[in-house]
Image 1 (spheres, one colour):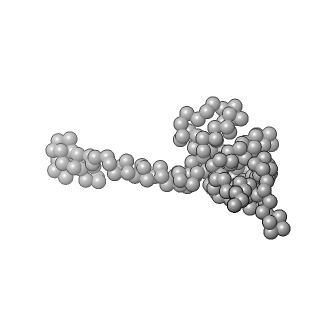
Image 2 (cartoon, helix red, strand yellow):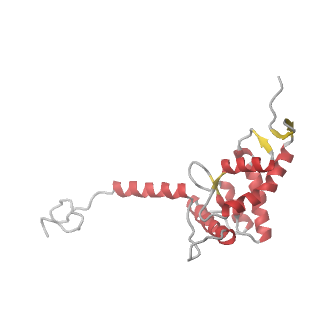
Image 3 (cartoon, rainbow, N blue to C red):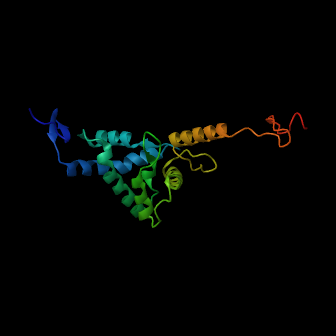
Length: 193
């Protein structure tokens, strides 16, 4: 039985095998315009998987290899091209599906820009939020009147809000320093006044 192709095109209804280099080149040609399209919608982001799907559809070159294994190389080309063009870093628009964060490969953006690596995940995400805003300001025609604001990806914002709410719920209720009864919402003890 013939082993399925890793990379292929469909030509005249027939699957034609292509090598990794050909596939990567085809996806690299499509990634910049695909990300510009994402940047045309204020606060839009795209997941790595969805971008992988878009690149395959636009290029006509397909793979069964998960994007995790090949999309970093393709996005690396965007980092360098955006830097050369003087465009904002479009790779900031690409986030993980599970947590809404940019990947560790985003540190290449910092490196190309002459910045030190991110101190932590939140610092990386804040830089990416600013880069996304720059993308929207460059490519989106329908920004808010104030020019827009930098924002974490929606899934990440939700996760942070849930953590903050859980943390607030875990804090002990304030108590009166004289009678040690839990204080009402007003903060004034009903017993001690």
